[in-house]
Image (tube, rainbow, N blue to C red; front, side, top):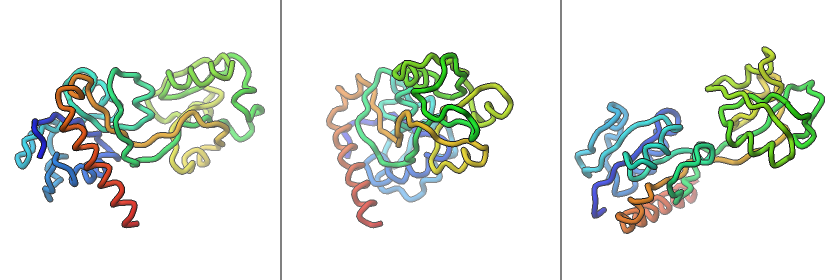
Length: 222
């Protein structure tokens, strides 16, 4: 068992179930079967283990961890890279695999990111990663930040192209877009508050070992 009671930030939405199932095999949940309890309240102490769980939007998990509201958290690499919070990334859970890509309308004249014209308008929910990506290519881009439905932007003339997350590419194709470049690959990562990493190092290491074992067992069972 873990030596201390930990505060854990879990991602709401599509990642929640898979992350909780991974934690089910660790001392965080200690094999508790009724995991639906965790989705009923935003903040609760799990009685079987005494650990505190809070549910947050994946995009907010790094903030809770950085500022100590949570000792550890789980969210996507894309969000971690975009937010650039002061925390430690300690484990890739191999869940929720996706990619942040550059996509253009099918009839767009420039099919290579490095050959895009200066002042190209790029719609995205990842302004920091997008700006750095085009800077690395020597392209001056006008970044238009959106909270969602990024694929709509080129259709209504808001942007020339987009940078967005995709898993299968289906949504891009359905909106007349084609992938022409990749910014980064992403999956769910475990992140740790810097102070907690020092004060709870033994517990953190134990959790990493347990989660790694659970991931390996899942791969072997496929």
